[in-house]
Length: 614
Image (tube, rainbow, N blue to C red; front, side, top):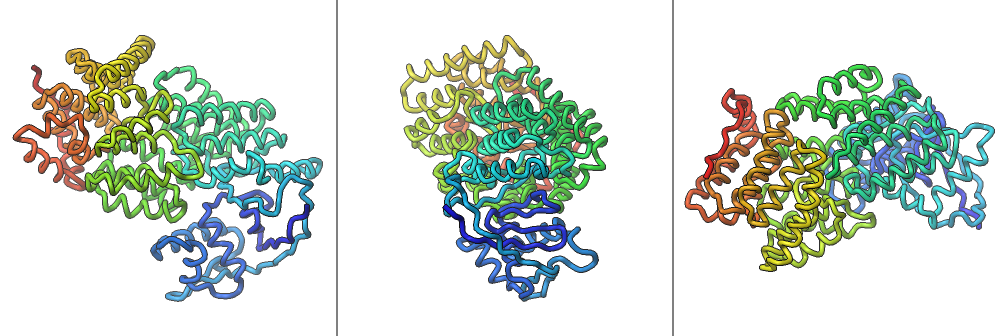
C-alpha cells in the first residue's frame, strides 16, 4: 500500500510537516500545543498571503467560539518558538484589525509517496506530539532503522499511535520535563518507543495508580535498554514522585529512587531542564523547601526560561502562605507558556475564591486543548454557584472521551452525584475507581471504600456501609503502623471511624491530621484537613465544633468554598443550626483581596485555636 504524496515546508532552521503535525528545528521536533501547531500550519501554507483573524479562527477552532486574545496568545507563543528562524525581521507580522502574515521565505517540498509495507494505512491519524524533551535525531548509521520505528509509532493499528494521540491532550504537572536541548539522545529505537509509551501512559491520568504502574514499567525498560537516555530518566523520576504523592502507602524508598533518577539525568545532561526540575520536585515532595529552592537556583541558567520552573516556585510560595508572590511567579510562567500555566493559575485563583479570574484563565487552557483543565473547570463552576448542573456536563464529557478518565474525574463526578441525590449513579462511578480512590480534593487519595460507605449510609444500607468503613479502617490502620505521621492516613481514619459512629476515635484522628499539617506549615494543603475535621464533627452531630473549624478554614485561602458546605450531605446537621445562615453569609464574603489581607494579619497567621471540646 502506498501513502499519498505530501508537502513539507522549510524556513530557516525549521521544517514543518503538516501530515505528521510536527515542527522540526535542525531535525529535532519542537514542543508545540495542537492549536499552536494548527495556527502555524495555516500561516505557513498561506505564505505570503495575509490570513485574516476570521479565517484563522474558523480553521483552527472550527466548532468552538474563542476570543481574539486566545489567538493572540498562540501567535505570541509561536513568535517565541520561532525567534531563531530569522534575524531582525518579524516572524509573524500583525496587520492591525486585519490578521497575520508569515514573513520568512518558505520552500515547499512535495515528498514522494512512501510504501508502508502494511505498517500504516493512508487513514492513519495525524497527531501532534507535544514533545516534553528532545526527540533523538536519527544517526546516519541507524537512519533506516529509525525511520521504520517512526512509522511503527504512527501506525493506525498500533498501540503506540493511540498512546501518542492521548499524549496530545496532556497537561504536564509541575516539574515534568518540558523542552530539552537534545544533547542526550536515545541510541536505541526500542528504548525511545518505550519512553513514548511511558509518557503517554502517564498522560492518561497521572493520579491513577494503574497509569503510573504502566508508565513506570515502560520507562524502566527504556533506561535499561539505553542507560544514557537522559529524558527517560527525568520522566521516570517524575513517575516515582507521583507514585509517592498519590499513594496511600508513602514508601520513602520511592522518593529515594526518584532522587537517584533525577541525579542520573543531571549527570548525563546538565543542560536538560527536566533533570533539574525533577530533582527539585523530589525535595518539594519531601516538603524540603530550602533544598527545592537550592536545586532550582543551581539550574537557573537552563531553567529561568521554562514555565515549569516558575510553577514550582509558585507552589513553594503557596505552601508558605505567600499568595501574592505565588501569583507573581505564575504570571511569569504565564508569559512564557500561557496554555501550560493557565490551569495552575486557575487553581491559584480557586484558593483565593476568585472564580471569575479562574474562569478567565481556564479559557486559555481550553483554547489550547478541549480536554484541558477538566477538574478545575468543574470545581470552579460548582464552587461559584453550588449548582451541580453547572459542573456535571464538564465531567460527563471527560468521562465519555476517547481516553480513560483519571481518578479525579470519577471521584469529583461521584461526589456531585451524591450531593445531588443520585446515589446509585455515584456508586457506579465509585466502582470504577481504583482502590485508593479520589473521593476528596484532586490528587488526594483516600480509600474508595470510604466513598462507597458514605453513599450506602445515605441510602440507609447501614450494614453494607459499615462493612465498607471497616474495610477502610483495616487498610488504614496498617498504613498508620508504618507511618504514624502521615496526615492523609490520619484524616482518612477520622472519616472511616465517623462512619462507624466511633466519635472519639474519629475526632482524635482527624484532629491529629490537622496538627501534623497545620495551615501554618502548608497554606495550600493544610486547609483540606480543616475541612475534613469539620466534616467529621458535622457527621457526628457536633455542630458548634464543626462551625468553629470552618470559621478558621474560611479565614484564609483554601480550595473549598461555602458551596461545598451547602451541598455536602455530611454537613446536614450543621445546616440545621439556627446560626448557619449568618455564618454562610460571612464565609461567602471572604474572597479575593479581602481574604489575602486577613491572611497576612498577625492574628490570622497565628496557630488556629482548637474548637470547643465536648
